[in-house]
Image (cartoon, rainbow, N blue to C red; front, side, top):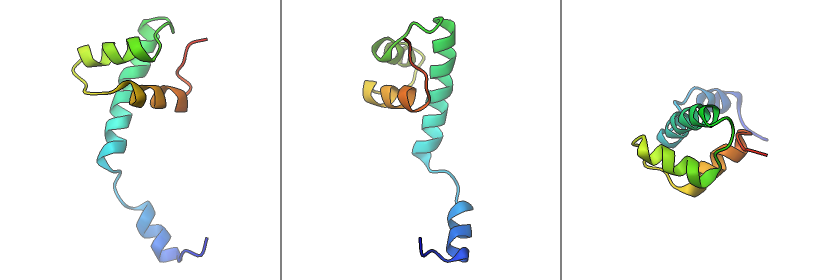
Length: 74
């Protein structure tokens, strides 16, 4: 990858960006609500539940987080 060791260490020591921190927070809520719903909530209903819980999220973001982390119903 042609990256210096010093540059790689600097990159790994950077703090997590605000969006990633928010994604982790939203993902925690998604997992909680998904477990409480016995795995029956999809993207639209999950988005509605998260908005009722006071989180400002959109369906695409919720869907992306659910899909990327294996939180989806079958």
